[in-house]
Length: 197
Image (cartoon, rainbow, N blue to C red; front, side, top):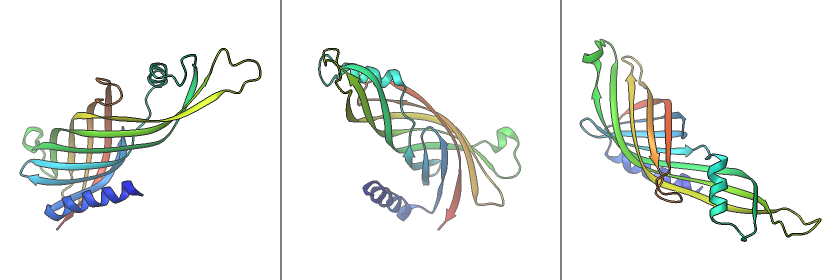
């Protein structure tokens, strides 16, 4: 609920200054709700709230082995839940209609940068070799928080007669928190409804 409140405040803040804005659905990595608004000619700001996929099993195993609950703990596995992702970013845009000889609608190419916060809850399952016969397996739940910059490139098409835009993009996220320098390739497609004020 607290995340929803923060998102509504951010959206309201953008909406106060926007002359037109877009709200839509993003499918991919991460997926969620996207809110985009122009801030100057050829520049836009965007907020995306949703869920990102979990990292690989090797990623979580390495995190466990670098921070064992007890020194003799042996990793058995993990369960990931409660994924959350938030992105704030800026992009520069350019119409590509002339380059591709498009007479109807508007094809936009864009690139930009931003920051991304990701959080998941990870339950680790482990045992210790000296626990003795009949000893229960152990578990420990931790929050895995990733934060860092992202860069992206994409294209969107706005229909001439419909207040809709579709987009596709590819990006790269680099962790600064949790595992410095870990890179994650991201991509998405989506659709936005264009509102005018």
